[in-house]
Length: 386
Image (cartoon, rainbow, N blue to C red; front, side):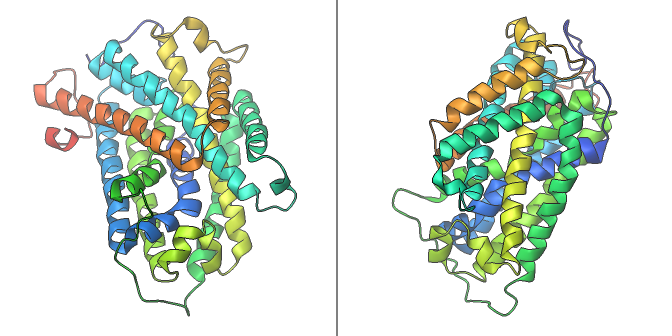
């Protein structure tokens, strides 16, 4: 079942390697809005110990899913469609379609989520804060639609400049505060109506960027090699960054400041201006990753006949799912005009947890039942997935 071909599949274009096509898009999506605008809030609400456990638990889910993705990806000839392709070719089109549509919606909603965060950063610019944030977000969304419509080649060339800005922002953050350590608060101090799991739900979208590189499977030179290497490397690198940021926040700012000031990272940084640039770069890159991933997912679903074929129309492009880009943009615009950041984060968490569960189930069942066509070169015990 794992290796079955389905009428309507589109072969990949084979343009990108592991670093460009998987590792960098994943890292730039994971180190996004939560890192700069919400991880301090998580520490302020949950305390150091619980905040570390939230980061570790979320990354454990992500890592186990990364193992499962790697196992499934090395057991078949991977075509376009990313996680949807892996699930549908392992568990069948019926289950694949049932999971693929929520996966696409979560990716499309993520575009809005990251754009809302980008607007929070842009509103620090004096003249921008005079406009309705939803109007600013709409303009940003249209810009992303145009970039994705032009193509992945252009979008992925931009990512290296974004990566440089992100690295400089993190250097600025960790370079500051060496002479201002404070006693660490380990006890939680939740606002009314919040608890551990509510804070976890706000944080979890931070680790969901691993599907971006997988979604570019049709554009990779060797997806069965690049997906495992790029996915697992991106999880380990970004988990280390998040853990370090949590500890640095807890040892430099009191919980009250962390809960109330979403720009707390600038108070610690040696060069606060670089944090502002980093926020804009991180949220831009995360939105860019999602706006590239979602159209490729919905195109693969439509090519399998689960959705109408016109959804997969490329509108004159030989490689880009342009109709999918337009549909993704429309969904993102609806969400932009209807939700705030924390609410959207909770919705995304539910969608992605569902998808990750099915990916793990697919890998676990294939291994458990001993499917003769399931022969991954990246092997994990079935119980790790299930």
